[in-house]
Image (cartoon, rainbow, N blue to C red; front, side, top):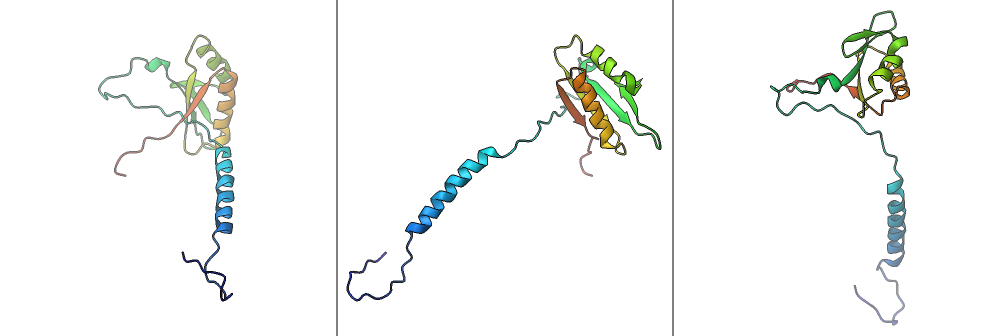
Length: 145
């Protein structure tokens, strides 16, 4: 950076950096304030496979899975751990299941063709039955497809 003395009075082609640094600092402060305010999404609860595939999990009866099955042209059918349940009985059954449990975790599995509004109803029923954590189960994706 060269400096000129006051002689000559001609134009200088050097850029004045002070306003640019001021703008940079203002933008830095704005972005530092905005970033922590970004919304946070929902926590996802994903079932994990057993570490040893040959060993069956001992607490398999503790896992509660509510299935929403698609029936063409009719309202969907519901199952709790492969046991058929009517929609009207679903809340009472879930309340009975979770009455004495410390761990209140449930998974919902819906068929591909089921409208999501039916699955959202299961969320509401489960929350009113006292379930704390609800996970969504998806089809298993095979490697190499």
